[in-house]
Length: 160
Image 1 (cartoon, helix red, strand yellow):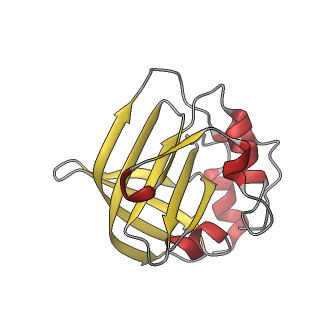
Image 2 (image 1 turned 90 degrees about the vertical axis):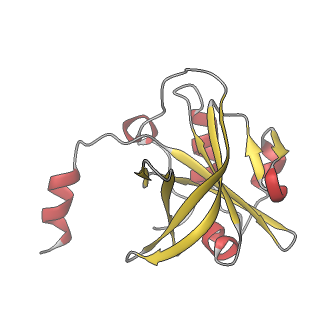
Image 3 (image 1 turned 90 degrees about the horizontal axis):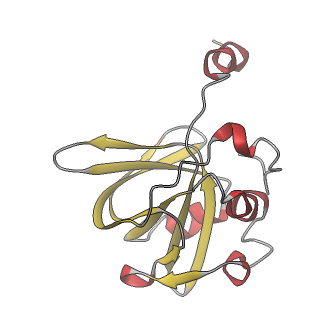
């Protein structure tokens, strides 16, 4: 099967957007991700997929904890920052509000956020799936999600 056929299948599907952040060995990083989902009810598990081309992937390779932030529909600026810039060139955290969470993981001011312990890493092609065991979960408000259609104008900081 060629990618054009697959693209036709997924075209028009509208996924919520997330930002993944990580801190490891004195380095922090974060990126916009569209591939994230709950993967188990009991025990609770989250799967988040990070592009191998991404600086965040390089920092997360050996990290114990990752934070997953569900963006609200009024947080396009965070999608632009974490999706349109690369940590290879700029410190994204100098341009937004954040606080240190469990294990030093950067936490952004988003309506929902989860810090998870990395249980497994799975090679999924051009992305790696990080299976997370939640250690901290917050739901700060009920704003609606920012979705893939809403960020179509964000130029990626690098190819996936």
